[in-house]
Length: 134
Image 1 (cartoon, one colour):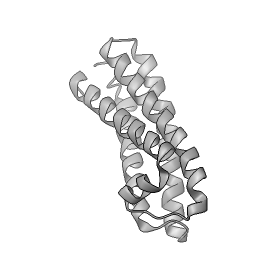
Image 2 (spheres, rainbow, N blue to C red; image 1 turned 90 degrees about the horizontal axis):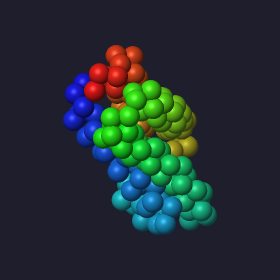
Image 3 (cartoon, helix red, strand yellow; image 1 turned 180 degrees about the vertical axis):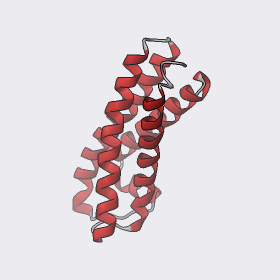
């Protein structure tokens, strides 16, 4: 994959997760409404806590964009991809299972699909050594 597309991917995932994480952290009820999902009022502190983890994934992706920009050694960005893929896979699997079990509403599927798509892109990219050739 060419370097420009990889940079766009990194910026898009980094900004998306960073913004979502910040919003979940500072305004969880508002953010969930924007996502079209509901949670009980007493869950808001925990949603904010989850926002901190979403933010860290976004910051890791932005760091990956920086590494691509400065043409750092590919192993560094590969590490970012591997670790963020682990986190995203865990989220996607948990949400898919919770929707199937009926403990999360169907609107959460957008999160599972986004994270699952990122895992797929990164797994393919790592196996095909996209970052080494960018």
